[in-house]
Image (cartoon, rainbow over all chains, first blue to last red; front, side):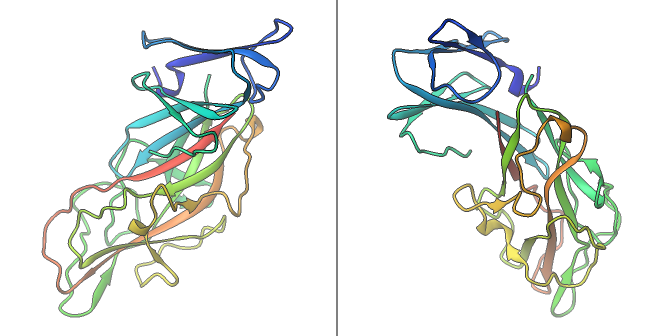
Length: 99
Length: 168
């Protein structure tokens, strides 16, 4: 299982529509990450969400290990989730995490 | 499914070898083979330069929407002695020939960290979309190793080079 595929996500809009593609979460009331390999699930509800993206890390020149972060930008904070172990990190809203 | 992005060692503007999980060996020959042939030789005086190596990102599988914000960086901690240098420069999308003379306009790669990375899509600007599947994306980053007469012989420990990208 590729590291980026260890989690799938879905978001629920105010009208109940479920989305699984895209980055705009401005009209969403729930965001969920579900692991495909038994890692912890994560849900965000009750906060104003803005957008989401994934951030991949490839280590070349003898490395080869990879990490993939799922990031959800909310009003007042960000949530990063590591795909290798499911660990979360909450940061200021504009914090760019690079490993 | 998320995109699959690879690191390729380039032998032409749009041709290369997947080195995502492999090693890029700096030596005195122009090929991507990882072996003990053609080692760099410590000079009696002055400096000796490896053949340049060029790395570029490759989209092996497409994103749902887009990939962008390509960044290249080191861990900022060179595990080699001070006499051994790694230079880089962003050469855009023009491949050029490999060479074993001193790189002009190069910068110390280990000065580029996650906090001050190399912009990897300044010339070939993203975002890169599903239509870019199975193509090279972003800029070509050229590297060269330099050793001086003060260097000591032996095989060096690996150093890593990180490529980061954002995906929607």
